[in-house]
Length: 342
Image (cartoon, rainbow, N blue to C red; front, side):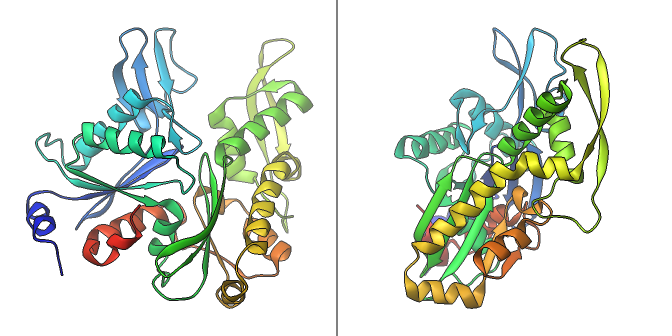
């Protein structure tokens, strides 16, 4: 039965699902779908902390700002590192989602890492409430991903989700609308970018920015040997001469640079499988493992995981939006799915 208060509030606000990620924030508005997909970046003026830009405009400023402007990412490793700036980020996105109608106070479902502490949960709830939410619900990211992927989470059967975000990788086994077993490692797309930056420093004395490293990862990065290896030009600053410099980078060397990060993900999955109760483990043999998050787009990662675990690995239809779609489905069926909330 639908809670009368929920029904009443739903008439006057467009409820929101948020995937508050280290790299990107996605916003789902009930009845409209995903209406916002922007980087979790805020540009502020030093000293006054006045916000100059949020999202796409702020990301364009990363590494390119004058001394009095800082482009910062207020979330690190999947959790809030800067409380005040995160509140500004949320406020801006909530206002954008409602066409800048500041009087709207929606109910919000926020997807958070499964390893989040009580203090970190409180910080997320406080930030969302201060940004204008009337009610805040939290859901673990692997659970939201499973719902977004269309898995039957309410059945007495095992489902495994591997969610690789910007700051964290989460592996969870889900059954009967609950997380039976989960592991979180503070490693994701950001660590992969840093590995590429470090490799080019060591091999070429070339210093590149975070955006360039991410472009290299997306264009030629891989976890498994490619049928046809790729290469691209990387531009940066020579650490010896201090002058601009361009080098050609191959997919083989990028794969080598990413090896430690990728192996950590594989070992986390294997370790979770080894600790999964036998009945649920047998379900996973039949159902496979579902890979989601931005890291799922790394070429060949599904092949590497499948060969390392002898279990079929499926990449969700749109890995970048799976979590926020799950948060949206929870909003659509709040009375039915309330039990999955933290």
